[in-house]
Image 1 (cartoon, rainbow, N blue to C red):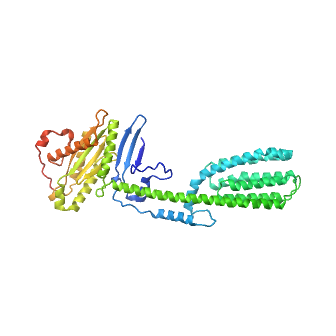
Image 2: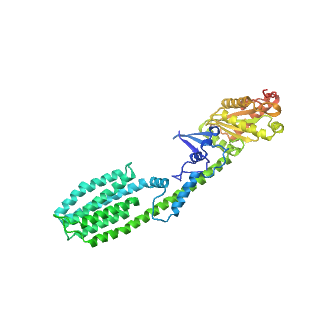
Image 3: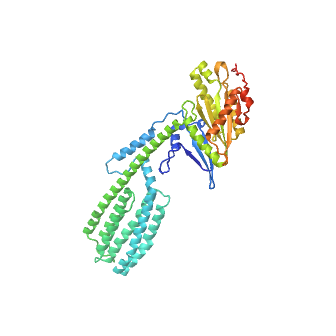
Length: 488
C-alpha cells in the first residue's frame, strides 16, 4: 500500500526535485492550530494486476486564514538578497546559508576532486619514462616516491573525500597528494642537475597552476593549498643542499612560477563567486516557487471547503463522488451514501434567528464528522441544511448503521431547535456494488439516497431509512413523530 497525499489534482510537484511537500510546508505554518477533528481522508482503493494503491487526500482546516510569509522566511529572503547585493571579495555567507550551500555542493564537488586526483596521478605516472631518460638515479627516486608516497596519499584522499568525514579533513586530504607531488618534482629537478632542472621547475609550476585552476575545491582551501605549494616550491628551489643535489634554481624561474599562479587564483575566485551567485538565485527562486505553490494550494483548499462548517463543499463533493464511483466500479467494491437533512431548519432560522441557525449548522457538521469512519468516509455540505456523506466500502446496511449513529449523536447533543424543541436530523442511506456487468453512475447513487431521504421525511423524520427498505406503503401512509422537547 502506498499513500499519496495531494492537495489538489492540478498540482504536480514531480518536476521540482528540491521542492518540499506542500502539506508539511503548510503544517509548519499553521503549527499547533492544526486539528485532527478537521482531518478528512478519502480512501481510494485502486487494485490492478500489478499493485494495490491507496490514495489519500488530506484537507486542512478551513477556519484558518491564508497565512502571510513567516518571519523566518522573510529573514532568509533578506539574507539571500543581501548576499546577492554584496560586491566585496568575501565569498562566505551567513551561517545557515553557508550550511545550505555546502549541503548542495559538497557531494558533487568531492566526487569531482576525487576524479581530478586520479587523473592527475595517472598523468604523472605516464611521465616516468621522462625520468628514465634523465638518469637511473632520478628514475629510481621518482618510482619509489610516487608509488610509495604519492599513490597511497591519493588513494587515502579519494577514500576520505567520498566518506562521511569533516570538511577540514577532506580539504587536507585533497591537497596532500598534490603537495607531495610538487615536492617530488622539485626534488627530481635538484637531483637531475642544472642541464634539465628548468624543465622540472616548469613542470612543478604547471602542476601548481593546474591544481589551483582546475581542481574544484572551495576557494578557502585553494588559496591555502596554493600558498603551501608555492612556499614549498620556493624553499626547495632556493635552498643550498650538499651532496648529490645540484645548484639552486634561478630566482627568475621562481618569480615566474609565482606570478604565473596568481591569475589562476583570481580565476578560481571568480568561478566560485559565480557558482555561489547561481546558488543564491536558485535558492531565492525555489523559495518564491514554494511560496506561490503553497498559496495556490491554500487557495485551492479554501475553494473546496464550505466556509461556515469547514466541510467539503458541493464542488468538491461532485468531483470526489465521480472518482470514488469509478474506483468502486473498476474494482467491484461497495460504495455507500448518506443524504442528511436537518429537520424543520427553516423554523429554526425564523424562530431563533440566522446566527443560531449558523451555530446549529456548525455543530451538526462537527457531529457528522465525528460519526463517520475517520480516514475513510467524507462528509460534505450538500446545500442549505442538507449534508452528504460518501462511504467507500460500505454496503447499504453499513451505511444505514453509520447514519443511525450520526442521527443519534445529534439527538443526544440536545441542540436547541425551533420553538424549544431538540434539533434532529433525517437521513436516507443507499449503496451500490460496482460490477463490470452492471454499470452505474454517481447520479444513480445520489438518486437512491435522495429517494430514501424523502421516504424518511414522509415516515415522520428523525429517522434513517435505506433505499432497500422503500415500499409503497411508506410513501402512501406517512406518519409523523412528535417533536422532542428540550430537556428542562
